[in-house]
Length: 418
Image (cartoon, rainbow, N blue to C red):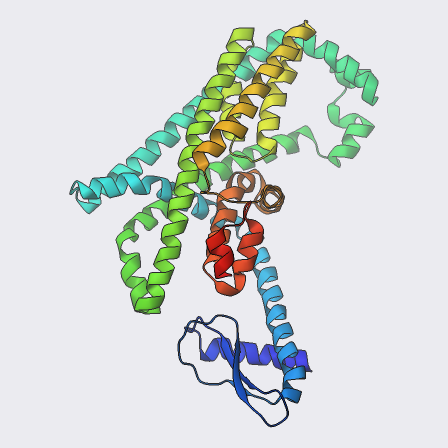
């Protein structure tokens, strides 16, 4: 019953005072009958009517119930949010990507507006730059995949020899390895695939490609809508939240934009540098399909922690297929590992500074969480999304201790404010 009353009071407070971002004043006392104003939550200095009047005896039962009720509401909100993120991923992922593209394009648009370009021309240039970059990247990926699939035939004998060795280790039947028997007819593989046929796999692949194209169209639509409302958000915030609260929200959004923008720009440049160095290493050792390994190094560099590991293992594994010399495989893997370690642990932290101040453990958990919700796209977006959450928590006083725990280091000004 006390928990239920706490939930009712919390809901009533949120509906009666939806625009007050401050604490809940409570009348309580040191002994029965004495009532003094006490608050918990945010102290913004604004006058606010007393919501609850209670004695010291009433405080012992009602205040804990109120806190439990608020915590229960928070748990319900988190469950609803998780459901929305999971079920609405087809719309949310393109929207989030469009927002990040807008953040990257914002300096260019601000510069063009400073040069007194018309607003419509700024939008056209921004959309044109986005389409050209996406088109060029898709062409590079297409050429890399085409060259890879077209050149694999020359390694059929080598693949067959390695396949026989792996078949002996894992117990796969020789008929499957020789091609006389379908891969889905092998009992172990069919058990792993759950009865999925090759036709089902191809259909799933085509469906995924179709979804990818559809998402690209949605990204451009969302980006266009964001650009159309770009200069109207400030006025809308002032009308909806009032002057003081709109300034606070604008400052939070500005901090998010600057930090995420710096992260995305530096991460993109570092990924290009990593891809170039990996391609040079592969070229020196004579590894085929250097464009493919460069593309993989570029994209996997956006996935924290495990991305660089995957981008190192894949070309090393193919080197084992191409080269018969174990020394060449070893030194190629070591050269790529040195590139990944140097760029990822020495160069990138220096350039990033404290723009993305996240705990390494939190980065790993966010990678797993967003990967479980949104797949590989969630892994790419895990760090900037988590950084946005941390910035929001920093500017909400009751949540500021959580933002401190999310950081890699304790900042003196943040700790003092908490």
